[in-house]
Length: 324
Ligand SMILES: [Zn+2]
Image (cartoon, rainbow, N blue to C red; front, side, top):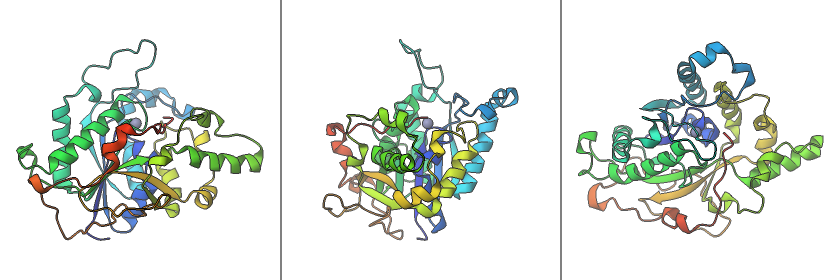
């Protein structure tokens, strides 16, 4: 798969390890160049691991998160770059407090799009991964990642927009990553219950009751079971953000490999033809139909020719919920 490039845009350090990370690790192993672009430094993340809630860690959280991110990228075998914005934090309370001044969610949309356009034009990815219109999780930074990524997908291919950001580049396909599928959690929950009589994912699953599963929007399932151990290790590298004894790690790697060996994505937009599929049939490769030796035309010819992206607002599927 030499010559292929994959770019994933994420909001915070650790998002890359919980959403599509085994897929990235697999492609990296196969010779695809993989770049994670993290928009913020995660400065406002809560310390979710009691063992890391120490004064020295709290005093240098931004520095700690930089080192955690470097380790995670290393484990996954991907390149990493910081877009340089500041975490907006998750506003909580009723009414919600205003967003902090200077944060990513309040940054000028044109400016953020321009910053991503520059990154796309430099790295020239064939495939771009981002979040769906619900952010995968209702965090203001995740919503901003979605809107800015989709705007940058369009603008990067137009030489008249952001001319200072480098020569135009047409990304072939954009995918949404769907990491937290109800069906997957139910399958693992059943198996764990049969094993030790405890409903490990009860709290998580209770949020989904009576709502449609995001699985209905999945177009693509990438087999990546051989990289689940890396996925766990990359997540654990974000030591301040994840409790190694938490429910997240309740299902052993072997069980996940046996029961759910894939990661799921939704084709959001494409500039190359996408074959029609029968219901229940999935694409197995994010690069299907991509020729690394043929650059797509830019300018007015860089047309999006297929995509569920345009129907997304009509979908009644509930957003998947990222617990963190
Ligand atoms: Zn996040």
